[in-house]
Length: 240
Image: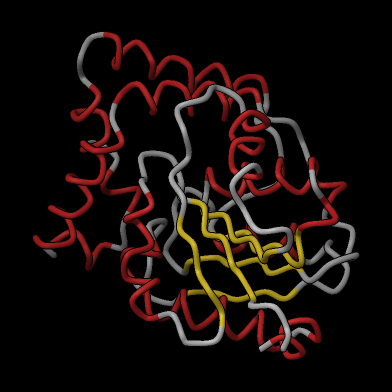
């Protein structure tokens, strides 16, 4: 019998693995999905190394937002282990110096004890307008943010600001999926489409009716897009 297929889901900034709770609930049988928490380390390379130490020998990799930066660092460290990579509402580029400096300014608010206030103020940019009135969704996000905590946020902001440009890793040698969200203000879909078009053989998809937090807003659609991508690839079909 073929060995089981595994897909690893990596969350974004201000997210624990519970950002994928709905995705896991909708995940089809036949592929084992693992949602991880990113540890409070201040480089994507260190986080990648920590993840690789606990994962199966071979796996599919899907990174959401900040998780995409970590996924690319994992690909850089262990390319032979990654069967395919999906970037969801993310980018392979490094920050421009001015963008990195702006990120680090947010750490002043954290040092002043205003972490939750800072994240609450970002809700308009994080969600589709229709989601902002969903009290259960807003409560779930705030509970997740509290669990994530200011120390992990500070470490991940530093990791984000210092991340390298890893576009060269997306060279068409392995299955690649790029997923945008229709109302994402952080990574607008037209921006995502431009760099996705430059990846040889990449598949692209858009989650309709979602903002940046597409895994929480449209978990069924995210699960379907990821699972269909894996199952459509020759290596996915062979082991399913």
